Amino acid sequence: MSEQNKLRVGCVVMAAGNAERFGENKLAAVVSGKTLIARALDAVPAEKLAAVCVVTQYDEVEALAKRYGFRCVRNDRPQDGLSRTVRLGTETLGGMCDAIAYLVSDQPLLRRESVAALVDFYRAHPSSIVGAGHGGKRGNPCIFPAKYFPELCALTGDTGGSAVIRKHEGELLLFEIGKEELTDVDTRESLERLGK
Image (cartoon, rainbow, N blue to C red; front, side, top):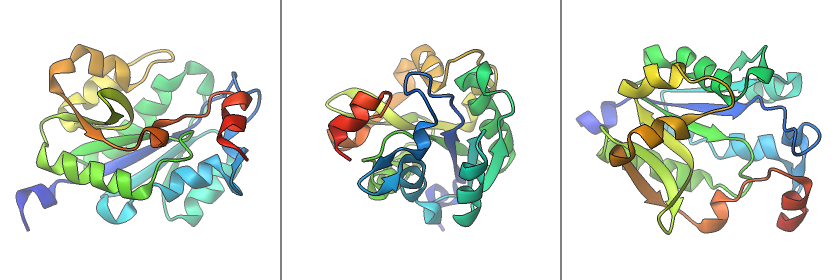
């Protein structure tokens, strides 16, 4: 087995937000017959990953994650913002992974094949931060090597990996995926634009 293939890449699925702009638990919203959270879990290429952790505040998300065979961590203080979700996921997987992909749960058009290709791309560039992007614009998911775990765990408030990337712009490599795959659903209007 090559050194690249020995790299243990984990995945944190971030599914704990209060979705205040949406008005209710948007993870239960349906796009083309499937909920946002089911679409997010479907996009995880588990066969390429050492471990998958879903961080959530919702019972129904925990139950679904278990059906997929993923471990689940409860975020008991979602009001602390995105940083707490990032920290809980990083602390859960950090000791067993050389890198972690952070996957948001509101990109319903993200394809499993694209995430798998992103992981392969990271394995070829294991010292870099790797992010999915289109036309030079970064989106999600992003993969961080272990050397960034302390910074990710030190985040506070409603900030995520973007704050770490801003401090290390020179270390970022983008992996091109379809523009539509980067579309996120923040409001009911954005969901309606995708077409139920």
